[in-house]
Image: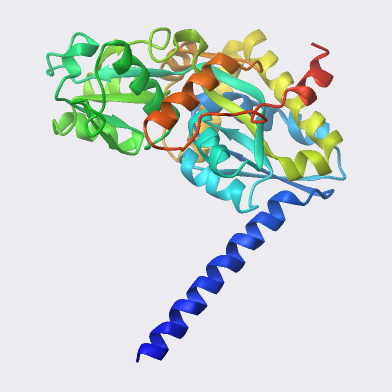
Length: 336
């Protein structure tokens, strides 16, 4: 029996090594492609991806010879798993999961910003919470451990001289799908939530949530990097022209959102319903968009501070993000 268990353990170890080797081989070998695998979330904070796909900008820029394969993800953890294992080449995600994964395995990089702001800290209407200090001993829901709202929450708690339970503080955090947070509020299972839009608006409507910190005060305020454009280095190295074409489509989408806000909201309502199966209210989406700033710029100082908070939280063993941000392709597209 010992020999059988030993063989099984050896085979399991070998399989792990082969799997990791395969992932590393994929991610490090630049090669031209005829299909771009494109990832994003069905969130308002991914508005540039949603609008750009709806308007046909990405396929138009790529041309008829390149196939575009869009795929949605529910959170940054699953997106990063997909990009780390070669399932996605290019896409949109939160900077939190992206930088944490980069510090462990630097095979991808940020090419542009996508949305600043776009997240709020809300509280139950009967919680009695009127300030950040009132979160002492309370339970706060976040979309995922190590995600961008997690890091933003840690920042505002630090500024108030507080912290997370287990890290010298008293505030308990729990990871929950934003779609389930209204139920948790109504059942009084959580006291507050740090969420991206449109879930802040959703909690206000369905659970009577009150805004504790609006988008311009939560985290780094209006400069909070909520969503970024990301790609594997193997993709950009092997496909520099395609990379610029995708970024050109991204810039077009951002400019369209700024120049035609009402039409952009209508697109989001239509596409979010198609992607989630849930009816989206125009006024709710408009309010969620108003809490977000579509952009292609990147606040490097914010990302550097996020990396430090990530290290302090034990999500990474270092905070050096050298090479994580590559704006060279964007500069060629915008001329700036």
